Image (cartoon, rainbow, N blue to C red; front, side, top):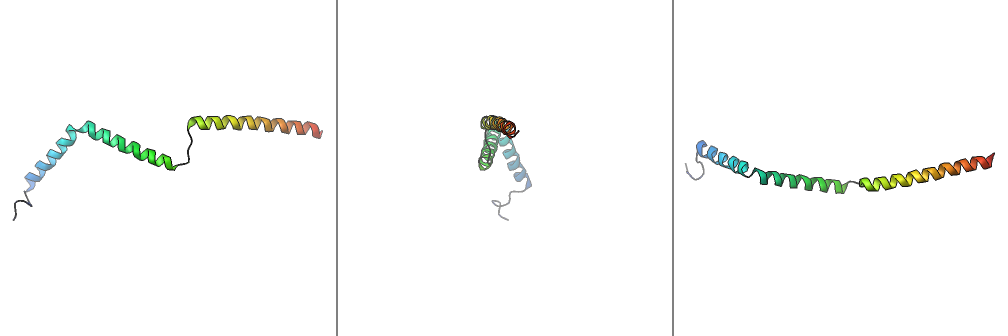
Length: 83
């Protein structure tokens, strides 16, 4: 058997433990990377949706309320004229 290809389970576990220790030591950077990736994915997904901001929604809501009031006023005026 070639020693370069198969080093045995002890060497494999030692390498695995080393990688886990690296991740633990760099947990802040790993957490930051994950956070950035998740934010990027969410931004990408939201950009594909047809959504508006809360501010835009509130503006449209106010416009609709004013339009509804004008319509109600016109309907009341037509009823008076119809009598």
